[in-house]
Length: 511
Image (cartoon, rainbow, N blue to C red; front, side):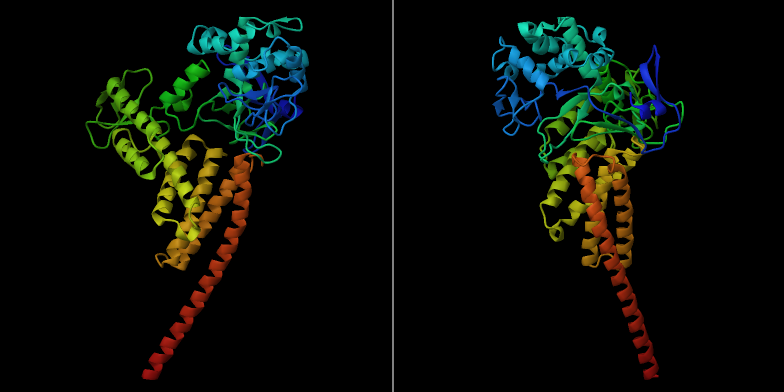
């Protein structure tokens, strides 16, 4: 085990949480807690068929084992895996193409042959088999992993290990419960991988869930995971990670955790019906103008925080289903998105999770729209709307995802970009004077520096790492622009002083 990790963290265990991590000393925000390699990496469940070496789109088969999908650039894949498939002569050449979901479970089994210590780590991880047994996901794994593998002689033993249905279901459970997403990485040639990957990181997976995390995870292009403190962590505090999405409502988070992680979260955010005042779950009251009906997970009703009126779950389900359908089916068109946002801001509330999802989609469309124009031709109404959306998102993220946050860093970058361009345009048309332009540019500089401070933890091989590099270049350009505007302000000041003197002299001459 990493000696640095052992210095910072202790592994503890109890009946409620199982194994978990506790800080052994104070850990500062931004401090590296752990750097960990995955013991297994593979494609996500139900992923498109992809290269077993780099996970880009597959176009051919390995020339050695004649079974593994590869891309046009990769000549080989993992040697132990290749040899296993090469010796499995009973397998048809299209077996992996027809049953691609078995790839990652097979890689788990191969740990028994490759590295018994890592196999033991995998077997020590939580699988929640008893909770999963008989569920829909259990049946899906039975159909697409267990039966295809047990139907073939090649998978029934791994050296002296007997492979049966229970073992395969246990492995599938470990993967479902413990893997971390390896998202958007690029290969060594800088080519974006098409498929997301997932990796098993035994030490990182010990972190307890909390909907308000105190850690940040960054995974590089070689699948190495780095765990940082996102806020100051005091000695004796648990290390938390949010295993769901920050901008999910309480109902959505609880549903995700019950179905995917097999527990009910009782963190402070989940116990607060206002979600720290953000109201991602609240519904507009139908009786009073200002009230919001709050979500109580244990109750069949939603109660207004102003007049006490109670909404029945049937009504809430109706308006939420309608909103969810509108948001998911809405074409990514600015006008249509604005209609959906306006409609459901009235029935839900402007900060409800489903409305925020539509606003995120709108912000993405506005970003694409702005990128399609030359800077001087960008529609100002699009820049203003993008600025509004970023401000709104930042208010919420700073509450729900405090400290160093990937989402906050991206929102800060987008806010700075809109502020600079809008201020430039408004100054060019005379709507704002040079001092106001200076003030806006200094604000944008501060925002961009904060964005870089959050995104600098992302590896250069990731999209966020590329954004960090771009932001650093833009910070340099922005500072040069600020200097030019400063010079312009000084020239304008000199010009005003000169004109003032001429006016004063002219008045004296007239007298």
